Length: 405
Image (cartoon, rainbow, N blue to C red; front, side, top):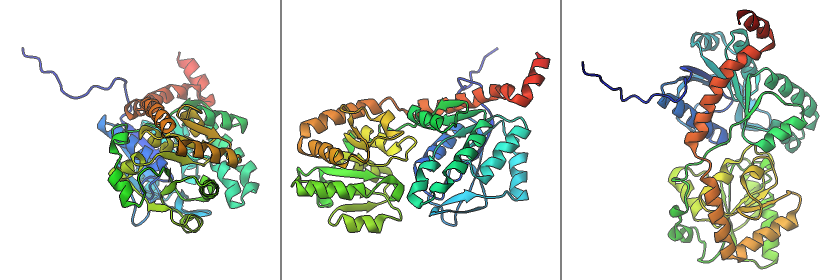
């Protein structure tokens, strides 16, 4: 008898067959959260996992979105109308979610709909994995909402304590959450980078010249949303101080957001590209000389990692996320955001010393090689499987499983 060997890839671990993912953002806006989740869903589907994605959307979403999509009712987020918050769940959506019969529930946003999804999982004894993407409490002061800090932290303690696994992007973020009393069953789920896509090989002198950057002028680049909580106005402060010291340089700002007009007024004559993606984004990174990132509200810092993979030394504010990626003095500089003079001096040091830039950029590229997406995404599948065993540790289940043993 002739034996036929299947060509189908056999998974390394017994992965769940159906995953229900809820996120407050998935296809209506392009940011680190949506790109990460879409990549995860694509990976799961390529391994035979059926994924139902429940998320708010808009009439003209920016992304096509991977997976089977179920739109959720939502309202604009306070102070940030480009983002959405899931609200109460209508009967039709509830039926679609429950009839899907997921093996694992993945909640990426702890809003009202995220809470309902989490509660449903607990009632039905379904493993619940949550990923911590956004440090909401750090945003409050930028919108004069400090009075909400205490009740928000209390709610987040409640929410994450009821999930089987809480996946956080970095150890520094776990430490910060611990200071706030948010100490669920934490695991580190970092982010990856496509080191072929983001690479120094995409550098283009012609492209720089097309932007008006003269040969030999250091191009200092920021990539990200143009919003208050990214501390983007620090770019203008450093730019002015470099001008006072007569340090040749050019700033390039890649991204969009409500603060663009104000920042352009502060940075006359500098380059604003708007939102870039794909090969254009990769070329923008690689054609730069220094990556500048003043945000202190990141949970990981995807753009920092993309800059490192592109061979750029970084000047970053000390913050969760960036502090786990940048090796101070080797791949770039880490400085408290309030130390503007020191940040300026470090930027100047890189701007005037091409040998230092090259050395730190090479180190950064080598460090980025440690963050490959295949490994990162497989780790989440392992967490899904681990969460299945964590159900036995839920307080209401301990007596049941002890009796069955």
